[in-house]
View 1: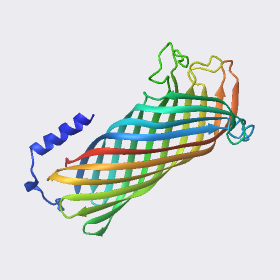
View 2: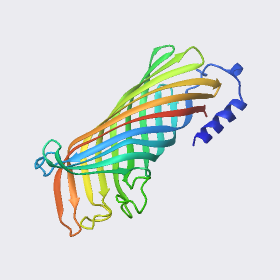
View 3: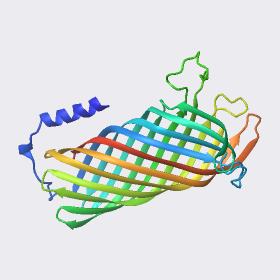
View 4: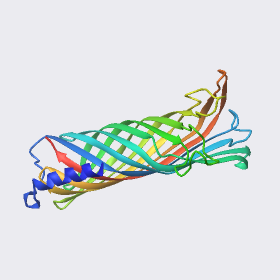
Length: 308
């Protein structure tokens, strides 16, 4: 993935030099930009459920926490501008490289009387994210533009509970055929703003902030539990919010291409949802999904090409 980004940058640099830089052609009304990117992300994610639908007995019965989930990421975005209107779409895919997950069960309220505490690995799985937005540019100054936009997205991610990599079949804590997972979906709709600042002629800086309402759904599999239904052992449903902040800096390397670095921080939160445990005999048990929360940071190397 990183070799691909390096190859793209090398091809661009080999066909252009800094001496050929120029300002954007303001006589045109249509512009189109393609921006591939590659990088890495670090995620923390957790959820916990209560003992019943009222959130009691105990108020926290079971809790799963994924920590230090390292991902490799690859994607691209397409931007079309017509006069002051702005349309963007983007797609990315991520692969889990490493991480740990704790599965903890409690017998009393407020995380008291732990009766089960196991640690697993999350070294496989992947995620997808698709986003579409439409906005309007509001020039503030000659080199400063404020873009207000509406956006929608669909996000899917799979996290795993696996034997830790250092364990072997002869180890006491090794669980043969363990392949449990948690897969969640995040369709969302909202809005945001992007501030685009051109510093001199060669450097651009922009920062984007967005807020979205999400409809959360997830399925989980405890693949070694014969008393649970398979492959879906439990279902989660809820509503919440997601925020994201994305600053980016780009350097002009030719009339039609730029290289840049972007950082993104996103956070999601769902509360007072529903957990449905599906048993092998067809019986369902309902409890309250107290909370789902996650935060992620990512760093990407970007290329930007003017293709129209």
